[in-house]
Structure formats: C-alpha cells, structure tokens
Length: 339
Image (cartoon, rainbow, N blue to C red):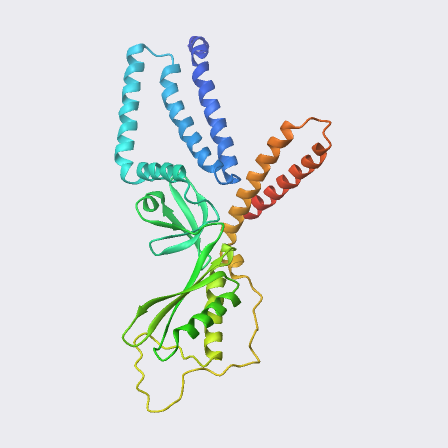
C-alpha cells in the first residue's frame, strides 16, 4: 500500500512543479521585499507596497492555472476567487480601498514630499513618510501623527514652499500712535528677525485699536517656528524702546493714572539664548527623511553620470569615490532611523 501511494506521489509531482515553483518564487519575493521595505526611502516604499500587492494577486490567480485540475474545476476556482476579491474590495472600500486610491491621487499630484511642512485641519508638522494607505507627519511637540490618505485627499492641505515662505505676525495698537512710526518700527523688527523684503499691512480699524500685520520672506523654512518666535520678540523690543504701548483689540483707554504698561528691560538677561535649535529637536525624523531623499536623488544622478563616462576619463575615479561616500551616508542615516 505504501508503495502504491509513493508511486502516486511520484506520478503527481511533475504536474505540481509549476505550482511549487510559483509558491517558492512568491515567498522569496515577499521575504525580499519585506526586508527591503525596512530600509526603503521615500518613493521606494510606496513602489514596494504596490509590488507586494501585485505579487499576492498574481500568486492567487496563478495557482488555479498551474495546478493539475480539470478545466471545469479550474473555472470554478477562478470564479470563486473573483467573487472573493470583489467582496473584499467592496467591503473594504470605505477604508482600505479608498485610502489606497487617495494614496495614488496624492502621489500623482506630488504636492508635498518628506521634509515639507504641511497644515491640514488643525494639524501642522513636517512630512516624514508617505505610504500607500497613510501619511505620517511630525508635529511641533516632536510626536508622530498618522493621517489616512483619504483625510488628506478630502481636506485642504496647505504646503509650505521648500524654497521659502512668508512669516507674519499681527499686533493691535491704539489710535494715538502714528501709523508711519508703527510701520517703521515693525519693518525694523522684521529686519532684525532676519526676514527678507519685509512689509506691513493695516488689517483692520477696530473700535478701540488698529490691527497691523508685519510679514517677511523666510528662505530657510526649517527655522519657521524659531523665526515666528524671534519676530514676536523683536516687535516687542522695537515698540517698547520707542515707548509704544501694546494693548489688546478691546482695550479702552480710561486710566485714572498715567502709568504705561511697558515692562522694564532687564539688561542682565537681554540677548541670552539657550543655544538649542528647536526645529532640529522637534522635526528630527522629518529632517532625516528629507536628507535621505536628497541623498538618494543625488546618488541616482551621479550613478547615471558615472555610467555615461569612459573608464579612462579622469573624472571617473573622483565620481566613484563620491558615489561611495553618498552610499555610506545613506546607510548611516537609514540605520540611525531604525528603532
């Protein structure tokens, strides 16, 4: 009996070779993609997720076609598989499928990438990851927030330009202060805050105060939080130095005494700084994601340049050394980002 069973297995084995080969190839491909996704940079991870989905789908469709089955049974299996996939897509459409489609849309629009500052709803931070189903941002408190791609696709997303943005601050001052003096002081404050091409707008003439807005161009968007804080400090410094009192929009000047609400300057603490770069601490993961993306882009460009050069070209050795240096830097950044 055992001999007859063994003979049956031997006879069936040749027919099972295609199915076994397909399963082996699928398992190896998924294992390789899983290891690669841990060290993938932006763009590669999204592509790897698509490849994983394609491998799983191809395996599910290929197994019934390669198994030694009758045509009627094979057709029934394919029909059941089609119904199963349709049911999965239909039932998951409000969440998984919808987020995947939104991920495709966001990738095609290319409005933002890792390292960019974005604001959506009440959330503000730097993008750290863009996957098929979600986008991760690092917020002002350094914590990570995962947003479904469907949420980003159905809500307005404000993206801070990587090549520079406008930093603004508003303030309310009384009608007893000449607007020309206010404008000059606010422009000086913006210049002291290292903002380029500053300008001042009168936003509103309220019942008790005038609302001003001072703005300036900030080229280093990575310092946007510090620049806003520095602008507020410089505004107070310049206004208080000239005896201009800062009040709230609803303040009514009905004082019985003539004491102005301007704090005395303490010269002992003036100019002191903690020496800490807040953006570097808050947005460390987003900063690393942007550096990896930039290095990956430089690596691919330099790789193409090396491929186009002749071996005897004097620039070949220098470019190859630069390629190795960029590759080492990429490996260091990726290893530092692993938990």
